[in-house]
Image 1: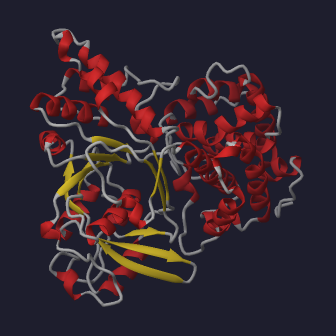
Image 2: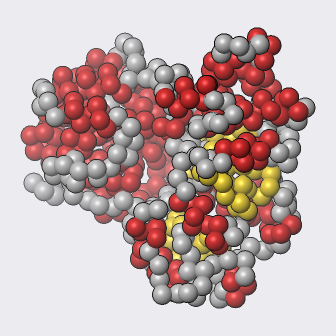
Image 3: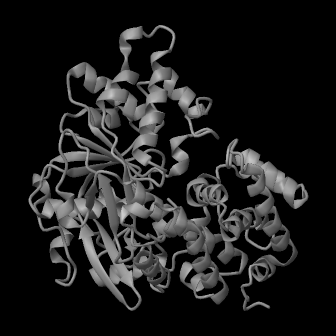
Length: 511
């Protein structure tokens, strides 16, 4: 656990089943008997986002009497969340913050926490339990282990390990496939797999990746051809798509101290978030689901238009704010968005991206972007630009590249979209120079660092980065996209965002 997670206040008692009863009346606590809750959901990747989003929705359902949907949390890597929450009986504080106000709520929907590397057998037993009817995931884009073309990276060491050791998996692919195979052998209906990560068509994407993994598993030497787990996953397991949205900045020591003062007891890992919360879910759950729609979840037949709007308008502008903010010296989103040049840029970015969204889906993009502007201006969140900047090579394809390609195909303007890609490259190159080394990270860091240290001409640099990250694949417009990004990179290298903005007709405060 990192130093900011282990910091302790002077409070001697921890938040727990015992101490929650004595919390101040102003703090909302679980309105149900937690001892009567049955674990019906397993969540892979219990981080701050899950605890501020899906776990909060499930908490509402439990309070309404739907006791069959408690959550068992699984960490695929780190022990941090387990170590923080287990001494607290799974309880934690959700701090909902807007400029000038803060509402505290204790969430009780997570009943148990497992750490997969410590006991993969326990995780598999929980996934195989007939009471488990839904498995949700927030494991971040990079954990889906996709190759440059979007398919499964079959050469990844963890995939190779899981194919050779199906009973001791490391990846979500391995755990889900082995659990589904065991359920099939036992005559237990498969659970529904609900992806909550920012992947395009996330349910269909995970379905394809898991089927690919299972096919490799079926093809192992010595495995009977009738094992057929790939066919079972392909045809018998539901993978609804979903779109999630809530800003969840990292928790600080100051947050812990402030919340401990309010609670009168210590919470090792409270979660900070904003009032806004959105979840759009494809309604495809053969073995049942909570009545999420009663608590604000939008259940639909097609998530696609909502997903595209969120990825291209919220996530795309978030990436723009992060990289341009870092290059402009802004540590948080609200400070970057208060910069007139960045604000003007984001407005123009939205104007480029909106025409790529479907016109017949009933999306109110004007209301949505107005809401985004209000959220980005929330001074209470202190959402760090460096946090958003992580994993750009995995995020930019769906947030920015997809929109840029559609603009090129339609013959519409895209100079702002391409600046975001150039800003990511420039921000990566700035680490260890004008930005601290390791200020943000990327799965391609080793190769990126070596490439960017060569000081190649801008066009060569962008081409090499596109090759490395697999941006635009073999699309016919790939070279045009590279050339447009390279123009911006020249400006960023010469005089940072000031010149890049000026080339777009945006006046920077720094000029």
